[in-house]
Image (tube, rainbow, N blue to C red; front, side, top):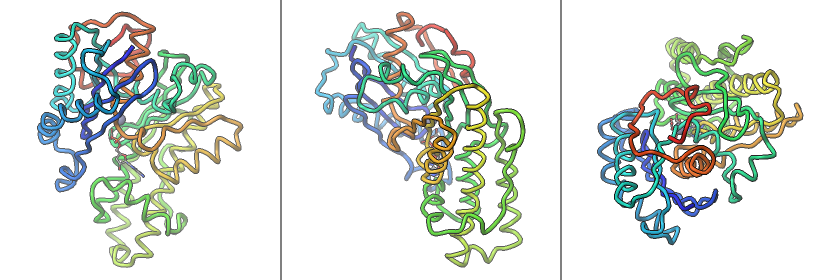
Length: 348
Ligand code: KG4
Ligand code: ZN
């Protein structure tokens, strides 16, 4: 099976060619520069940029894979969740392409695709995945913070999620308060390396609660009050690094602690993580240390596959088309698609 997959749910225009569970090419055109001027993603601009970039990105993915459109056996795209106008561009283009080529089409759940990105290593995903199920997977980005028990291939249960802000949003919004450019997550990661994570004590919301939910809005508010009372912190480079390291430590502590607790409660021996925040070096180190000391196996998505990409969409589409049912072309975009609705449902 040779698939062309598209991902346009937010601010990355991406296309990938996936063949029998292996990624042959993965092209991502990021819109970060465009949106940084506005301090966040502007949906209408994102959709227009997807329109401009989609075909060049698709052509480049096919060329890098050495595959022609006529050689494709299926086409896939993110169906949801995401920004409706942005989703529509990739989804409709992919659906039309499948229609013209008379090939099956698969509309893919964005979060479900993240669950498989830690398994993209160059080997066929299904073979590698087999020895590590069940697992607990943390999906953590600018739009979502979710814990999922992956019971078996294409069978999962949502354990919990954020009640308010996502962890990436917390990085971005606290960074904005510090005057850092959007997205602030990578900048806080960079500045934290020279800072003292114990310099300031910020709250660790919901860390002791016996559930798998998160809340990050209180942490953001406490950074706002801290900066109101100590504005001089931003004028001293050393204090700014300490502030970044302390905020990062609070977010990482909550994410790692709750993920490990969820894994214990769910009775699994393997933990995985993906989504843009999984690029964070402190989070990667902390999960590695905690899993090692708890005897759990850890699979982190490679940094270039943590952020949104079409490779994970193609990998999941291949699995769905192979294991579940033939796809149908009558699907529509679902901007608020609940991951709980996915369990055991048919392709798309
Ligand atoms: O998965 P992603 O590209 O897009 C979605 O939000 O779906 O994730 C982007 C998020 C942003 O909030 C960004 O600040 C955060 O991931 N991020 C990081 C790092 N790299 C990206 N946060 C902390 N440390 C990083 N190194
Ligand atoms: Zn994502």
